[in-house]
Image (cartoon, rainbow, N blue to C red; front, side, top):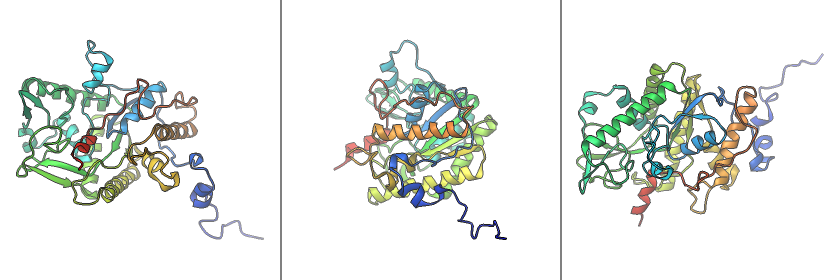
Length: 362
């Protein structure tokens, strides 16, 4: 009698385990099974979104499908929708602006929950120009800058309160990892949102240092951020993604193409390991869906950097379809397709502060 034991471990693997059947045999838009969600994200869950520019697509898609996206820092009622957007309300779940790095995420959480060291606690740096003040943690958040230092710090404190609210009330925290390159204050170690002298401030090589983060420190910062969030919300689940948008510019002295490859591959590795280490952390492959050669670059605009609406829609449909397939009775309104694209229904593009570096291209 023949044994039912397969001759080797590969003999009983599904089609998705083989390139020929899972990738080569399909039209790129028909490649499926790229993600098996660990946990359901339902229309009843409060979901918060932070991170790089690409995180904005998640919030728009969630809202369009009737999910409960938590805006922890809503705009004052006197502002029109356009005015609110110009002051960066409703972009992320709190008015942090883009959070591109693991260190910046950890920094916002430490400030919000009072977990700062003595150097950060004493750091009071602000940037002034023509009688207006900018917050180095989010220099473009306020149109024209703040009228006074009191206003600047009051607004920052409001955002820190919103970050606390977002973490404590959320069921799911979506964070899109964007960059490894950063600029820091040499003395305090505080990381800036953008390089001083680009969108504000005056660059001082004695005070400001470039730092390209490496795998161990990114993993350390992300674990610290995750632990701080779970300490304040033990039920919180975290969904990590990596932005597929290449670097606008690099200060690494490398070619921007190879600098992008380094940055994204390290972030992808960290995200994968964090998801493997924690059952309440998952990784969604928006990065692979946009950037992988199997998709033949079809999701990029002619500048080979901007993700076109077709790409964003495909990413979000992949997310909702995987959720519906894995948790058909738990997910929300996933049966209808809603195009989100690079602009929302008002035709407004996502906000990407890093793109300001384009102004310095030769």
